[in-house]
Image (cartoon, rainbow, N blue to C red; front, side, top):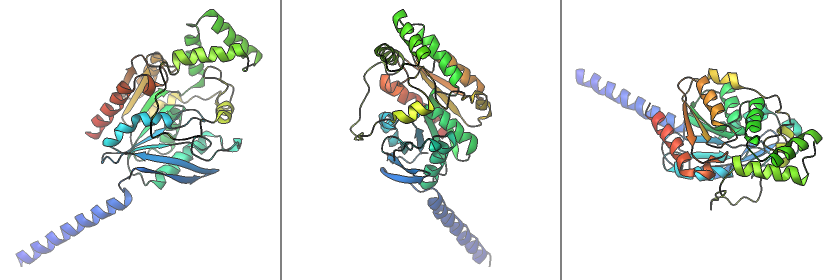
Length: 320
């Protein structure tokens, strides 16, 4: 009788293990490399999965607003360890384009991320944002924290007033003629003058992408960023905010983050190191990495160091 009871217990145990295994497979399927579309309010968003590594996937949110995910191809090698999920936010890149300002709200962008997460059945994942994508990552975390294992804020933007103050500090290091062109343009609201456009190019070369923008054989998109969205939500240039985000500020919300967090910025980033260090101090036990020689386009100016910072952080959190 003891042997019979023992056998029954063993059968029950293994049955439980098998059921649990297949149940887990249904709720968190292995992500396969490829691309597709997800329906959201206002149209469809395009996504792509790079790599089929078995570790926890990472979902990447691009900058803008109105930018594209194309810079994230520089992180494709992370796919050896884990699926890297990139997508174009509605209105730009390979996603459906539109000029409906009613859709251009933070809430709608958050719901796009939620729709993609649901469609891919992500049970647990890392969240990475770059520039405007860091604000979107924070907003998503504040509303939907479940399943987020850790967050990476790369060249973060959380406050328009702080961003503008940083821009003013950086502008003060440029030649007087460039400073005057920017001041004149902002006072007259003439953002199309040759002087203002030239000043914008000088600013971008110093603090945006300082070296050559890297390309990828994976990037075959013909659609670029959406200037209409950028102008409506932000403004004409990185240093002039006139859009709906003009009063945006979520800095104090950083204190509520409960997951491991990494802050990354470039040595010459528009998101200045001093400001990003301040952000880091607001998040318990957060890490900070400065990418040497890089501007805002850290993945272009110093790809290897940017990749190492991300990979090291993810590997460490994986072991926790």
